Length: 334
Ligand SMILES: Nc1nc2c(ncn2[C@@H]2O[C@H](COP(=O)(O)OP(=O)(O)OP(=O)(O)O)[C@@H](O)[C@H]2O)c(=O)[nH]1
Image 1 (cartoon, rainbow, N blue to C red):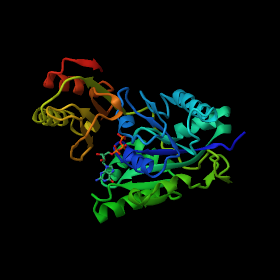
Image 2 (image 1 turned 120 degrees about the vertical axis):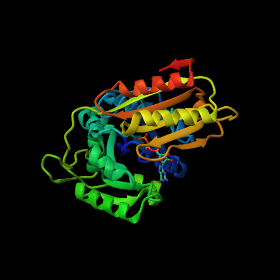
Image 3 (image 1 turned 90 degrees about the vertical axis):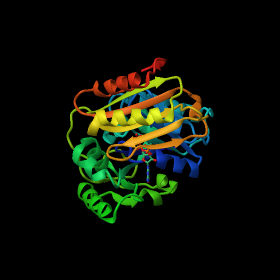
């Protein structure tokens, strides 16, 4: 049997910059197979990933750490078989982008528990993006962010261009306390060569160093029960005037308050050929960017929101208000 294929897990809290980094790495090398996990049924990240010939698989409808663990197993098997059968180029590495709510240990458990996969894939690293501006607040509020930091082999600071030196310093101190064994570096200086780097691992049970590639790790596990982050998505056809969209976004943000953790969308706008890409991260301004064309061939407008809190129905109610506000009758699926 050939050597196991390295798997790199790219994780990090919602909106912390995973897809942005993934796209930079896809520009830099063509020997990756990519698996993208999205929390909701309606996907946007896969369409936003650069089309550079790398095979890209989508795991939608839940976190890879729990709801779609089985789909991850199947996806990895399919990738392996397609590569062995010559149906895919002989990619060197699988790069898995988790959702921003994933527990990376749930991903490593898939490799640990499946004998077939264990022989054919090896966990190379867990790389965690941390938003330098919003990271400390996320760590204080969301156990998911804590899990991602404690599981990391390498922590990558994003949005350093927006952060003050004091924010950066305080965050680095907090990260070093939470995970002293991980390196901390700026994502901007992390090129795709990082994907080849092996990290020493320790066995969770004995605490002894295991050869690189073993899947166990010694990091302490913060406790949580289930997710408190709930996705919902809306899909529709028809164009919206830009001013109307701005009003609707303001109304949505006002209704949702700080329960709105993440928003992203591709929206057809009057007089624009391509869609408007909309992104918002809790506490940060909404970013809009016109794209020259619809990525991925799907020309339905889509909006995905992720809410924090106990009530999983909350984000669906926001989107229903959004639909009514904009008079969107032609909803293809919700
Ligand atoms: N200024 C600045 N913005 C960034 C940087 N990295 C990401 N962003 C912005 O942050 C927002 C979220 O970035 P993404 O790369 O989509 O984050 P993500 O972690 O993939 O998001 P989810 O998949 O929803 O968890 C987007 O609006 C990006 O343009 C950065 O280094 N600097």
